[in-house]
Image (cartoon, rainbow over the protein chains, first blue to last red):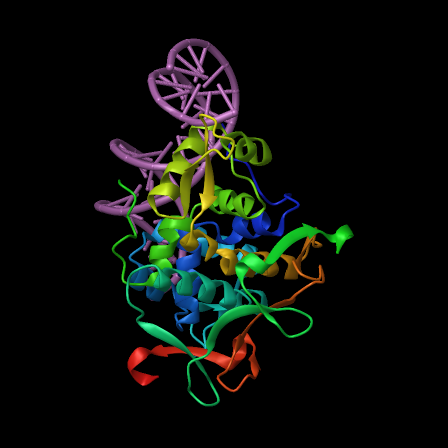
Length: 146
Length: 146
DNA sequence: CCGTATCCATTCCGATACTG
DNA sequence: CAGTATCGGAATGGATACGG
């Protein structure tokens, strides 16, 4: 039957998946962070079929992750650039990337601090008193209990 | 035609998507973090069809995200628990969750420190000197340049 | 309880051809 | 270049029935 939509789901993870639960969409966002802006650039670097790319780009634009802007050269074409919301996906991409690197396969890229060009520490959570917490130190509870 | 496999992709993001590029898998992992362990628990909380759940659980086990352990009560059933690799997905889930929360829709859950039950600070990157960095403060560069 | 086995509708993906 | 149109095959999702 029809695939269930997650738009109305109360869980923010589920709702996010409506946008990035799809493989091509994530890869397109990754390319966007890598500086790709044009239809043919995405097409070539991802090797995705045009019709699929068209649909995905449209979806990402509709969701506010990408936006179409007029071509810089004043040409007839437009480009796809990340919105503020789309740029917020950076940490998501980095989290996915670091997870993938940690499990076999060597790192091809490393995340560095723009100021001193030195690698940054992997992301982490911090308690209110400054302690650093591992995954096992935290849990998810209803807002009412916090 | 056949859907392309991402297992051999050189990009760690793409490879990770082989495991978590699928909506149900992400939701299952989310439930696992929420303490769900048994087939019927996942089934009920997600409302997913049994056959699909079976396939997804098998895939997650095959990928080393979950593992089957004998039932605690010594019963005939087993349970699905997150492996070390699976627990590494915590930051990914949290990144996705926070992105979803930041874009409309109020939070239903909050992440708290197990020790003092107080909310933890959102995830962040930290430079080598302890400064906290936002997404805009970092960039991805080839390993050779770092 | 924990699956397995079918069945069917829907969706998706890739290829190709075509257009302005 | 940037799509649109169409097509066939594959995968997916859901329902249901059945079994140890």
